[in-house]
Each structure stands twice: as structure tokens, then as C-alpha cells.
Image (spheres, rainbow over the protein chains, first blue to last red):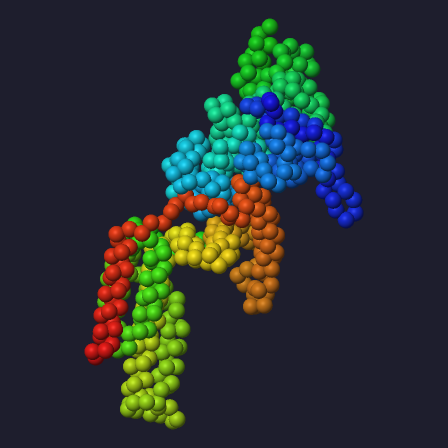
Length: 280
Length: 269
């Protein structure tokens, strides 16, 4: 079994009095173990719903979501699903439970009913992983947004999940905090082998991924490596997304007749590519 | 206005009193409060005053912090003292005008009462100054834990969870209020001037956005807690387990000695 999360013909809609608002219809998706997947999409594309279906917060109306082969509809195994797939949300303030950092990180393991020594050891190692160990006795509201978000990540990794789903974790952060959080996520994937599903609207974050999905009106409109997806800038624009400025620059220059190879995303690569193209 | 707001007014000076088990501190505070009202004569009360002065020194928190709290209740203190002067007719009349008589007994009673209130405030301040809100919550949960044997375990857990979250969200709400106030000020709402009714009306544009954002936060928090395997506290364990130490036994012993001396004074004098 290679997939940690499987969506099989999932349909999900919000029902209101007037009409049913369909978010996902006959949706299929597999997330491979150990992968780093970035899901892009504009507001209202169904990104958050997709995230919340992944750990059973939302249950599909038809079809099934399997986490390590366990159906999220299975109430008995609900805790198993939630401890396998951890969730990090957008607003760091609204996901911290306790008023001391280490007590907050301990919240997940405490709920799992682990013995005290085990909780202590997990809390310490989780805080060290996100580089927040020296803040363990601080009060969360005194920390910066990026630090709070890393505490939230530590709270999730203390449950030793196999997969972490992050729903726009950097949307409310400043550039420094954003980079710290992204570096942490990258490290979790590469060093700890945790499967990452990162939902974002920051295009430049997609360059860390093995796989980029573009979601538009509840449908996957592009699926591939970052290089494959970003080599079609006009298509991205049609999905209501901003493409990275570097990609757009390259694309516009290419239209004017300069030659580039595909898949240039980072600023350094772009600078080098433009210099090389001008020298020709 | 909101910037100097400190909740629970905890001062981490790490004194001997700070390191006591919160359960012991809660029980001893309750004990001392009862003891204050058990001291029926001035000698016993003087003894308690002496104990309380020792307590203030032991907490290593500046005296002016305690005085600050006393200032807060000064109007109530003066009011009760004055009322009590006229309340009793026993004893020798020392002052009489119109229909009002003040007796020596009434004066002693009022002094007693005001001293008791002052001691009450100091002792309860000492508790909140030396115990973090979190420890108080953990202490209360532990003290109420016997309720689980009569099927109220869930209720106790829910209460403490509510306290924990309330404490956690107070700074966040203060921040939010400040933001909303600034936003409304920028739209021309005047909070400082105008009649009382106008100023009360000016609060409404703060309260409504605050309420909406709180409900939204609560919803988000519930999802985050659920994602972290919260299921109403069943089989929940704790990172920090309270342990009674030698100093806690000493504190209890000290309290028992206090009680004995106070009762002895009550009988002897």
C-alpha cells in the first residue's frame, strides 16, 4: 500500500436552505507516502474542504476517503485517523489551546492517553524539531505569528503523524515567519519522512513540492511536478491564480524571442537564465 | 486602557510560596480565610496579622502590589466600617448625637471587621500573585477529581477545560478588542467624549464585531482540538503531574500550628 490518503469518487456539498452548494463531485485523488504535495487554488476552489476531508473533520456524502486503508467514516477508528493525519490551520491564534507553549504541544499526546514520561519526551523532541525548544515555558500570545505557527506544527508532530495537512499555514504571517514555517515543513518531509500536503496560494512555495495540484471549482485542473505545471503560465492564469513573478518574467521574455529552458522558478535560477540568454 | 491589564496578576518571583503545590495553596488559602473569622479577640487577630506579614515577605513580592489591591476595595472597606459603627447598641455609649449612638463595642467591632477584610484581600492576592492561572486550574481539577467516583468526571473535566481556554483567550480577545477599537476610531466613532448614553452606544460597534470574531475563533478552535484527538477528556493523561513535596508538608504543619495558637488565644484571653 503506497498511498497514505485515497479519495474514491468523493462528493461533498454544503447544504443550505435554498440550494446545495457542491464543493467536490466524484473526486479522486491519491497522496503517496513520503511525498510533498502542494495544492494551489484561488478562494472558493474547495481547498479547505479538501483538507478537512483528509482527516475526517468533514465526512464525504458519497464515496470514501481512506487514510492508510481506514475509512474516515469509521467512528471507532476516528482517533487513529486523526493521529495519522495531523492538521495545521491558517490562524495560529485559533489553534493553540493552552497558555504555556509546552502544555499546548502536550495537548495531542495527552488526549491519546500516553504515559507522562512519553509525553515529556515527545514534547521536547517536537519543540526541538521546530526550533522552539528555548520557548517551551513562554506564553503563546507573546510569540510572533511564525513562532506560533511552528508551535502549532510541534503540537501536531508530537502525535507522531505519518502525514501533515497544512491549510494555508503562512497566509497570516510576515515574510520572515513564512520562510521559517516553510523551512520547517520542508525539513519534516526530507529528514523525518513525513508526508506533507501543503495548501497555499503562494506560488513560490510550490517549488519545494514533488507534485503540484491545481484545484479549480472542485476539480483538479493540473497535476504534475512544479516544472511541468509552471511551464503553462497562461493556463494557471485561467484558473484564477497568480503565477510566480519569476515565471511570469521568463514567460514574457520568451514571448519577445529570448530562449529559456522550462521550469525556472527560483530567483537565482531566473537571474542566471536571463544572463545566459542575454549573452547569446 | 487595556495595555496594563494583567490577568490573575501572577508575579513569577520564584519564591518558596511559588513553589508550593497549587492544591495545598488553594486549601490553605481557604483555611486561612476561615481562620480569620475564627479569631474572636484582638490577640488572636494580631497573631494572624503577624503571620500574614511573614507571608508577604515570603512571597518576595513588593508590598505596594498588595496595597494596590487594597486601594481597589477602599470604598467598600470604608462603607462597611461606617455602617458597622451604627449597627450595635451594646456597650457603653461614647458618642451620641440626634438619634445615633456609637458605642465602644461598635468601634471595636468595626475595627475588627475592617482588619478582617484587609487580611482577606491580602491572603487571596498572595494566592493569585504566586500561582499561575494554569496551576490554579490544574490544582482545582485535581481537588475536584474525587467527583469522578460519583459520575461527574466529565463535568469536572469540562469545567477545567473551559477555564483553560478562557485563560488562554483573554490576551487574544484584548488584542482583538484593541484592533476593533482602532478600526472604529478610524471610522469616526468617539469613545472618549459625549454623555453617558452616547458612550454606552459607542460600545456597541465594538461588541458586535468582537462577538462575531469570537464565535468564529471558537469554531476554528473546536476543529483544531478535534484534529488533535480531543474527545471530551476520556482517558486523558497529563504532562505535568502534581506532586506533594516536603515544603508542602511544612506549609500544612505551619497552618495547623497557627490554628492551634489562634484557638488557644481565643480560649485564654
